[in-house]
Image 1 (cartoon, helix red, strand yellow):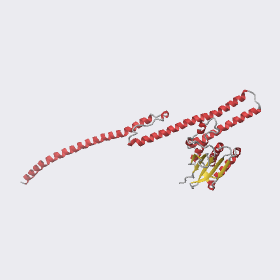
Image 2 (cartoon, one colour):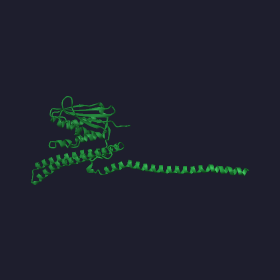
Image 3 (cartoon, helix red, strand yellow):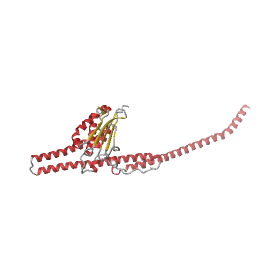
Image 4 (tube, helix red, strand yellow):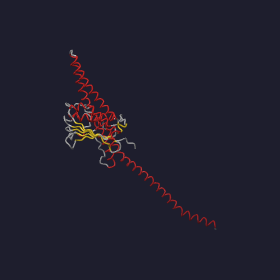
Length: 334
């Protein structure tokens, strides 16, 4: 009887378990199918999403690749209205604009240098050829040699100014900053210009700040800077005019401010943004320019070497004239 009960129970369990096992297998197959389909759909979606995300980058790259040194005025337009890529396109177009401006400045500088070098070289060659056509007196030869020496001095000055500006822009030159008496530098430069100052009957007003006696600057570079600013002021101030030069502490942190003003004709508003560009003044009046046209560009380069800046403006009180202010901050020891 016990054996019969076991058989009957087993038969009943088999009847009950059989359908459940089948349903379990069907459920497993169904879940496996869902996983396979879901994985496939996920892969397809990921592939499509990755393609749609990378495709604009390819298009932007293709446009950027077509831009060559001669076509830097072109700009990237692909997906410029898409929020996700607007920043990238703006950065690339900004970089292209800066490169285009740099190439433009380089081409203009090369053309200006060629012109400025050609003028004294042509004059020098012409004087030599005239002197060699026939026998001359010793006095004539001396005159030719003196004139040639002036042209050589001008070429030398131009070469030195160009070298300083180029090395400063390429970060190949650093300011050798030591405690320096800037007041003494200004005084020495004024003394060196006394013959021209007396000839033009100019009045020079010097106002020195006591703190300027220990400014930490490069004395040689600051001397060239002061020479150029005062030379310009003397050159463009009419006879009987006044030149003002002043030193003052900058921000109370050990920096120095140098200001040079004159009572000349001043600067046209349209010229102010360009006065520190190389050869800019020479471009405006080559026939009557007497300098190299690099002086103010050199002043700006020296200011930048000290981590400072130079600002040009017109005198707004007490008459007309130009005003140049150079700010040379103290060394950042942070």
